[in-house]
Amino acid sequence: MSSTQDIDALIDMMAKLPGLGPRSARRAVLHLIRKRALLLTPLADTMQTVAATARECLNCGNVGTADICDICTANKRANGEICVVEDVSDLWAMERSGAFHGRYHVLGGTLSALDAIGPQELRIPRLIDRVATEEITEVILALNATIDGQTTAHYIADQLEGQVQLTSLAQGVPIGGELDYLDDGTISAAMLARKKL
Amino acid sequence: MSSTQDIDALIDMMAKLPGLGPRSARRAVLHLIRKRALLLTPLADTMQTVAATARECLNCGNVGTADICDICTANKRANGEICVVEDVSDLWAMERSGAFHGRYHVLGGTLSALDAIGPQELRIPRLIDRVATEEITEVILALNATIDGQTTAHYIADQLEGQVQLTSLAQGVPIGGELDYLDDGTISAAMLARKKL
Image (cartoon, rainbow over all chains, first blue to last red):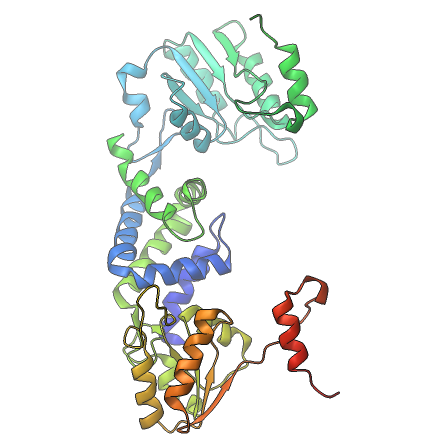
């Protein structure tokens, strides 16, 4: 079907996106083709722009369209706090919560002996640099509460021991969480970290 | 976050695609940005091409990159059979099954009194034209087994009564289907259409 090969190629590419499969890719592409003036053309143009401009911040690893990202260049965010996250998606989640007003450091993953990912593969040396050079008062380790995440947090804590105040996110019952549906680990953590009323 | 507005715009557009939401759109866009040379640029280019070339076949309503689609132009498919489907996705499903070797007619929806969709809103007049002008021996009504689909099938059958042989897809137990999990309607249909061994 030579003349539809572009459409087939588009479907194949879309099907490879996380969260999409062949079926949903076909639906999405048909939807885009039906509204091509309204949806497909703008989407294609925006993709071109992003493909041409998107890059990782040389300082913190955040994704943006400049060599140094908006957060790193924003003076009002230079409050001496660095929030260390595994991934840009975690940074975005933090930003949505609006709970943090300092700067970030995106590791780009976690230490993993199995996958042979050591400190050099992540942005850990750069983090140690930043703590030494920027005026950092507190490093908040906001890594996922997974084994790899916590291993990485411990490693970073060892490296920065004594140079700066180290904190990590509180663990406990999520807001709106029901004990009955929580795993034992979370309940024990919440019990250990219980606070006075 | 001015310099990331393109990325945000891309996420918003992706989030509007069927089967995607804000969360999966963010994941997809991050994935694309990480592999922008490998994935994002080719995807953007292909989208541009499709946006520029995709159109509906003037004859049958199939989606392609020419005024008359590959199936309508393929002589070996001019076997006098027209398979009438609601939507291009149904045509694609038929093609994947490889069970049909004739040509198609995509209605572009079903008759619906509620949504004020009459024969003129669909490609029904064009179908009646085709039956009159092309050498059609059989019209296979492969419409969805929904109320609207069957209403539309009945309407078309009335219009083409006597001019051509009319057939519809068999209804019954799907291959691999377990009676226990089938709805009563399907079981009764299969019972009524039972065949000699």
